[in-house]
Image 1: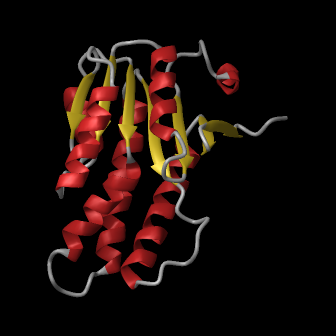
Image 2 (image 1 turned 90 degrees about the vertical axis):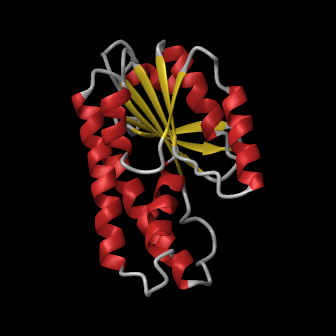
Length: 196
C-alpha cells in the first residue's frame, strides 16, 4: 500500500488496477477499498452466460464483505452508479474487461458483420460516462481492467477487435486516473504517478 502515499488524505481518488488474468487485481481492489474506508459499493459487470461463469460469480460474491452493497450491471455502468451510489464512499468497478465484452457481444449477436465504428462509439461513450461519474461523485473509485496487449496477436478478427477496443478504453481510464497500478503475480507496481 506504499504507493498510495501520493493521494491519501486528499479526499476522493480514482485508482486503476490493470494486469493479466489471475494477477490479483480483484483481491487488491478489495484490500484497497478496506483501507480507504466504508461504505463500499461493489459494481460487478460479469454476465453469467454459462454454468462455469455462474460459479465464478458466486465465488467472487462470497469473497466480498457482507456489509458491502453490490450492483450487478452489464452496461450503462456510470448511469447505474449515479442512481445507486447511496452513501458509498468507495466504489469498486470490477471489471472493464467484461464490460467491453458485454458491449461487443451485443453487436456480435446480431448475426451480421460487426460495424466496428458503432461498437467503438458505444464503448467510448460507456467509458466517458464512467469517467464523468467519477468526477461528479464525492467517492473514491477503484477500477479493475485487464491488460490484453502483452500476449500474441489474436488469430481471429473478433479477438483483435476486442483487444484494440479494450486497449483504447484502458488508455482513457489511465489518463483520467490519479493512480495506476500494474498487477503482476499479486504485486501492485505503481506506474502513475511516475516516481520523481
